[in-house]
Image: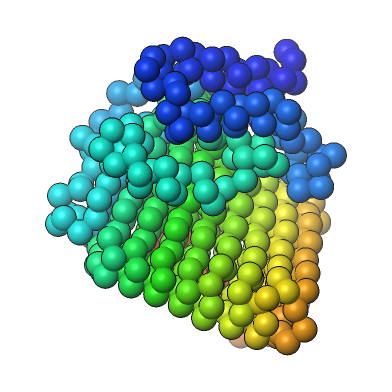
Length: 435
């Protein structure tokens, strides 16, 4: 089987999609597809020779075959099993990458939020779509972004108008149904938050079945002046799942963006979180936690790009690596020449509990301004033997002492989750995974 098998499938999928467009082929939305597939063909699926993929080998993924249009007969009752008890929210369901309004609960939006598919937006509000779609993503150098742009067809736009505060979280539930075959899901969403608006967005990724899946997801978030966005991404997928996800955030003056990215489970996970601070007096916060075990691989790449003065970015990522798992953290801070008075901080800390587990970290700081406060740092180590000895001397069994230390280590990130039900759920899942 050729290592370009997946790439060939993607190119075939694009041809099939293009032939089905009929009169829409010349619209600007679709013209982006043509440029994107051209870029993807030039870039190809990254290998470890690419600096950004040096520690994340996609060779196994490139050999796989997936169905990009699988059928699913998953029921509402089965989807209910993914719900968090008593968590209220505006829920949007995607199954194998396709939006399913019949399972969603838009009625809870109470007219405050506009939600439409890309196909609806092309007919009903093309100006909104064309103003923002693809403007915050890089199709020219990012292969998976180019692939996503070429194939995305059924994503949604979430539009929070100016001065609107949405109290309930908007929850995007992405489910891969792999009970019958290996499936691929290309998911593309656009979130536009108006001036002085306030919203909480949560993306949840789960898988259902015992076969492999490939998820390529990209979310663009535009945060207008003085807007406030809390963003969560939680992955709890199978060991056979390949997940390449990108979140691109563009912030304007006096806006606030907070994110928490938590990876509970997944075979191969790559999270890209890219923030562009293109305004003054912006606050940005990035938290991350990952707990891979067995042969799982979790790679987090983050960027905070300061382009204007007087803004703050603060980042904390923590990892617990068990068994033969591997982890990667690559965090970049850019402070442009005009971004004087910037405060930018980055910290990545990891605990390795096994001699077979490995962690690769690469913090990067590039500063062109001279009046700034910036720092970055990363540590990777083992558990504190003295603390374990002390706990055992107080009658706590060794296994329990280790587990309590790891839970305390994770608490710095878990405690930052602002939605009570989500925080309690994640604390329980992490506790269960630590054994």
